[in-house]
Amino acid sequence: MCAGLAEKVYGNLKESKNGVFLGIGTGIGTAVFIDGKVMEEIRSAGHMIIEKNGKKCNCGKRRML
Image (tube, rainbow, N blue to C red; front, side, top):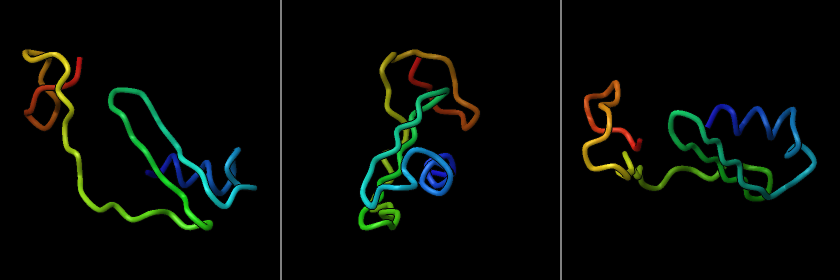
């Protein structure tokens, strides 16, 4: 979410009232902006398992890949 906020304040989203930030790296992160404000998280999705026996994450759960 921090990267999304930075994009809203300093980046390509700064001129937009509504937008979606999607960050893909070691995980997937998002931030949704409606009327210039960040949408509060309603429910955490947690880990999305793509490879059943993938590498362990730092939290101890299995990572996506």
